[in-house]
Picture 1 (spheres, rainbow, N blue to C red):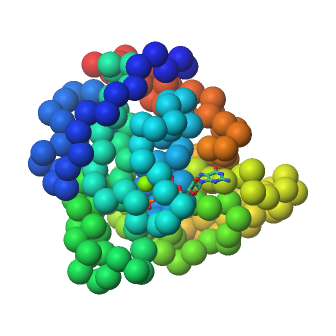
Picture 2: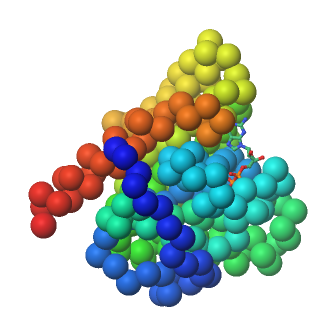
Length: 202
Ligand code: GTP
Ligand code: MG
């Protein structure tokens, strides 16, 4: 898919004030610093569309980006960042949860996982929560430029085995690097396929 336009629309803290639209949207979630904002920039090939930082806790709002005038990408704050303090963490958790539960145009949530580390409880619990609420999601392994192909395959296999304890079938899993652009076509093709299916069903 060619990205001919990508524009920032608005940021806010409340799902009720997200853009009023019938267009489908795809949101990115995962632990702080996993690379959500970087992935949005990589997919759109716009370096400064979403703000990134080497320190966790950069994105604190729900950010809407309109792509090709036809669908939205949504950058969300990360979860589980301890240093933000309990109150702030609870506030972000509520904001993220109500976005996920009540945002009608949301058609797929991409949950990002750092490909270097083994399955973490917080992520597995989050998948369970999504399952309970029947939220469609897929998984994106990030930062694959930081490990060897052998290690990546090993980590991915381990992760799939862990997921298989709960999930059948497994959600789609993509492997990406925002540094090298690997996985870009796979993610964009997946989005395009869903967009086309939605158009047919209208
Ligand atoms: P929060 O908004 O704080 O939740 O973080 P985030 O998930 O949006 O992460 P962000 O995109 O800001 O990236 C965090 C750090 O990881 C930055 O220093 C990025 O440059 C780095 N990073 C993200 N993706 C990749 C990647 O694929 N490869 C490498 N090597 N670094 C990456
Ligand atoms: Mg971010």
